[in-house]
Image (cartoon, rainbow, N blue to C red; front, side, top):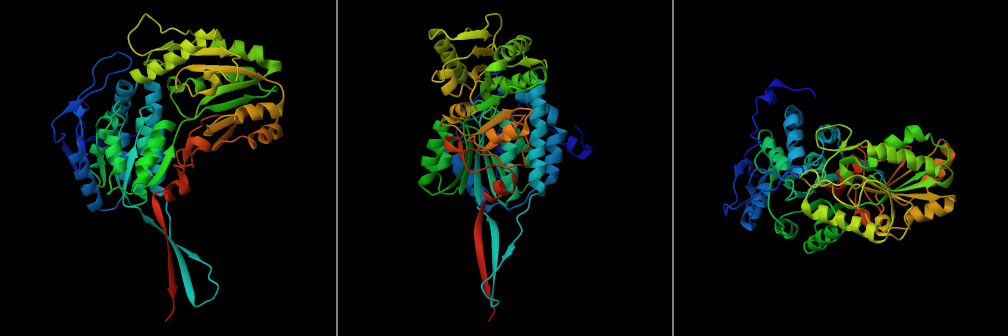
Amino acid sequence: MGSNGKHDSIKLDFAVFRNVVNGKLVDSSSKKTRYSVNPATFEQNPSVPATTLKDVDEAVKSARKASKMASTSFTDAVEAHAEEFAQMLVKEQGKTIYEARGELQVSLQALRGSCVLTLPDEEMAASNNSRTIIKRYIPLGVVVGIVPWNYPMFLACKMLGQGLAAGNAFILKPSPFTPYCNLKLAELGSYFFPPGVLQALSGEDDLGPWLTAHPGIDKVSFAGSIATGKRVMQACSSTLKRVTLELGGNDPLIVCADVDIASVVPTVAYTAFANSGQICSIPKRIYVHESIYQEFLSAMVANIKSLKLTTEEQAAIGPISNKPQYERVKQLLADIEENKLTVSAGSTSPPGDKPGFFLSPTLIDNPPDDSRIVAEEPFGPILPLMKWSDELDVIQRANNTEYGLGASVWSRDAAQAERIARQLEAGTIWINTHAEPDPNVEFGGHKYSGIGVEGGIEGLKGYCNLQIMWKKLC
């Protein structure tokens, strides 16, 4: 990553964290603090403010007064501090250092992409020449981004990049488990934006409801679980806030009979277990044609057994990010054991030789479609592999879910791949790849997987009000 001497001169202390309100670093008005732990070592991370409702009111007040601007210099400064952010991501989220650096790269892409998107006024055709009709996209006002713990840097940059590019003021609300990078992101922004344009508040479980119910906020962008997304939408309805919801996924990946197993398996395994399976849009149900199933299964087992449990190596898998999620994944593993499903790689028990929320990458051989590991989103390093023989049947099985975030088809036959892909019910369909990121392309879910999109021109429009201006000659 390149750097700029000007931006290198900005010093960020990654040992001290405060809220960013009205361009200033501030403690909670109650002076209370909280902290999270490194999920790989259980070491305590630094203290962060426990925001109060009074602090929320102050941030919203500042945002409503803020000037509207965006800055490529801010993105350059993030890049100059990329390694510091990556190291902090390892400590607060638990991903490997290689994955953390990758997250910084796509975060920068999201910021840079947002800087070049524009929504110019459009002149529309009128029924006669006595009038002109102009379509305009104007800022909503104050936007809150509620950022999850699995990709805190990328999703924050994706939201705030578009929110600021549309001319809004933006308040970041990070997860209580991963507040650190988001607080530093807003602190860095205070060098480039007027007070109130980019703020960040760290807090506990009551902070989100305070923000979603606040009458001074015009939109909430949320990424997270379906259950929490429903609560966010319900809270926003009281003041008719705009919402964008990027929710959970249980992506099917369909492998056809003609694939080159040796080249496909490493990509599928890497994608499925990326970030310890804690990504909404990675493959979580693998359907393999029965004619190649055993060979594909054996190759997957060999690949998975090569992964190490650590945050320091490239061919590695980090811990589950926090204790509540760790316990949820362990419940799924217990269900697998209780129902005597076949474990081809990994284990239903945590490794006992190290601290941290580590779980072995685990492959389940041909479980029933109604088993929990198939029907639910695990959000952990567990992957079911199932057989299929009939094309229409596998499409029906892939679509038989409340989720609709992503899906993929793998085949050398382009016609077959596209035929299947066009019948899958999801917001994004990939052919011969999966979860390939492009933060400047629209991304959103169907069914229970979301409302609206982030990214691209359509995502930018989601941070605007549409206004039609009629001009008639006197």
